[in-house]
Length: 532
Image 1 (cartoon, rainbow, N blue to C red):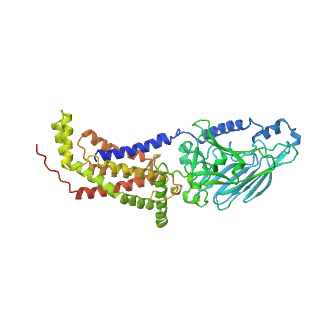
Image 2: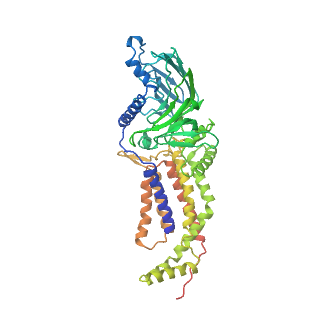
Image 3: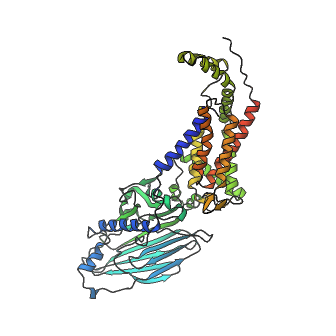
């Protein structure tokens, strides 16, 4: 390996490190479920406290209920749960606030993921201090009603889809007494949206609130502790790496603001779509999606929900790679083989750049003895040393930077592929062969005394070692040591990475070794003796 290849690997490593520690910081590893619930509950209490500062907000009628109306005038309903259960999900509703207590996604393999972070912060709650009357509960429908002593009524109807993750919510507000002030209706989810247990450590840093801009050429805009006018957007959502809760109003003019709020980096974001206080009887209708962020599946709804899937800075390349990956999956019915095929095709497409780089490396390796002789001869005369080295490069028609640019051109492709594999929901639970039974998680080859051995990163590290040994042009002992340290660094770095990413890098290394071997065997560069 010469310094150009070393530069490429160091840059790749730097990009990954920046991603993991700067753009995507990881929260404390020992944050257990109780702490998450405590933080979410604290944030929810804070958010509710902010809502209760105005009599026009959702919790204000509940306060009026307690402070102004005699308890004897109020109907008392015990807390009641309503369960909606299908093959795709299981929702548990409560008449307390007519809210969602639990929303469990079924993966079809016996695993269930509850997307509600904390039972102390139910989702889509309106007036959480009161218990609604359960008007009806059917297999795919639940209706709740609350009559306020202030002279208005709210009827909240959930309509669920059996075979889809898209559902409907109707909230009707009616005036029962002349002069009664109708309340405004907010749509709230959070704080947070939960995920798999194995991804819980990173979930705090990945959970975000966003909204899709209205009109032609719309984009998904991530909101960080800010408020945006609702009229500028078509829908709003809260999401993490693999799951999404999105709300699509039939009339965006029923709402005034889309708000994203969190207390600090130790708390989850809270999403609020703030309503407008109605002057007359009003029915607010919206569709809402709660489920996985499968890119192809989200496209079927034709409202750009797939834009919530993060393909990174090189999004166009990432989406293209995913479409091609999906095509090969349809042909092989195996995402592991699809990754291998796609990696080989990428290597073929960039082969001219790769060959140029490897030829430059091979030429540098062959003139290395001459460079070493010159360095020894003119070690005390740096100016003469530079002149003589340039003479060698010129006479041998070698560009010392010839292998650098082609390598740098590959970085966008590498990074797009890296991000795509890291965020593709489709790889969740996808098997390859033998012990690799989930390409979205680190492979588990063997567990000894609680320590899991991941075989793919070990194979990848060994391949990198032989690749560097085969092409090394370094004569400096320090540089040689660095070259042999890098495979160890990469092995540890990829140790807990998803198997799909490791498989991509491993395949890429194998193909690169084959290409390098061919170039080394067939390279026609001849080193002539320079007369002095």
